[in-house]
Image (cartoon, rainbow, N blue to C red):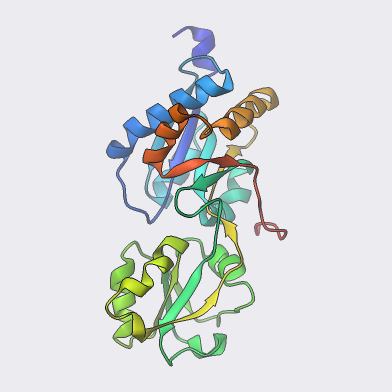
Length: 257
């Protein structure tokens, strides 16, 4: 690789706290994605690299590094860290079986929660529990949680729901895929949906601190919006559970600082 090309190398950081998957398993899929994205965007070959970290702490460390120019993150992560990392949405993910937007669903034991005040002293568990601003101000906008509610992150949603049915003072905030699986659970009748969010983005691919020139960013955006429209790129996207990308559709209220 020439010195000029090396200097133009940009890194795309994938970070999805709470969701399963290891960096080693993901890397071949990310390499295929970056190769396809570069080709459809007209970027020089090997000018885009990708890395994956499944943890909030590890992802933040990677995103703060000088070579990190792009972030692919769930919307809760974006809400929590957009201001700190100077993230600017480039495109929004169109996720397989969900779409570009999703609703979050708060579930509690039947007969136990009849309004926000009845959750006093509760613990709220969610795959998005690391993003407390997202939980309180976006997923549960209009459902003001009592100040003493503890919000915790978990990837063990089934175990969390069993704690709910056991009568513990616990509620679970589910993403759309998790909520869709509720009726299939043998203890589903012990659970009650108490509130649901407005439609919110599932995930965003964002610029980090203007580390890409405007010209490069725009050609990449144009290329990403084309992905999924051909059989070749669709085959690259499918293993990442993506159908393609759309223009960002953020809520009217901004992410909190």
